[in-house]
Image (tube, rainbow, N blue to C red; front, side, top):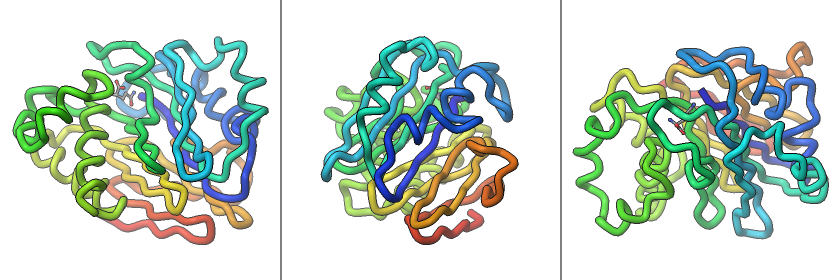
Length: 245
Ligand code: GLN
């Protein structure tokens, strides 16, 4: 059910970040190793977001990552110190379209959701009532993930920290749809914040860099730490913390 990753550190090419490791996001798109709770491959589109200055830019397609013949050249030509990428396995009933692919972005914030909201959309109707009509009318896509992004973005606009925004939204959704799977991931160029609810996640601290990824990109290499379920990760390029929530 979707795979995602975020990177913070010295600028790297999108290709080095997303395509070149032994178990890169590209490899995970057709050979994921830990798809808990359904799904076999991530063929319903992909997206790569990166910070250029203080603006999040992105490239998204509604085709499998492996079938985009232009991606390798494009990805080799763009470097950034803050990247968030995702490959998608659409939840049954949700549209397979480019705007439904993460990352969802605003300003420097890049966001992705790996999972599913149980009972969507009825289960979250009470949360929708708290959003301004224009926000609901302007959802990126009619999907659970785009709605979660709208909730997170409202928290950020109201001044919440990224960690509070993700943990508050996860708690509010679980209160109404307890069997949801909610691996949320946000990278704003200063920090990466992530939640784990019923999906895999790993963290690796490098030399002045950090990578948070659904699956280890070079399994067998030292440094990858699994994140336990029901956790909140707060990471910068120099350190990370894992809190139980
Ligand atoms: N439910 C989300 C979607 O359909 C995420 C799916 C997933 O994690 N596989 O886009």
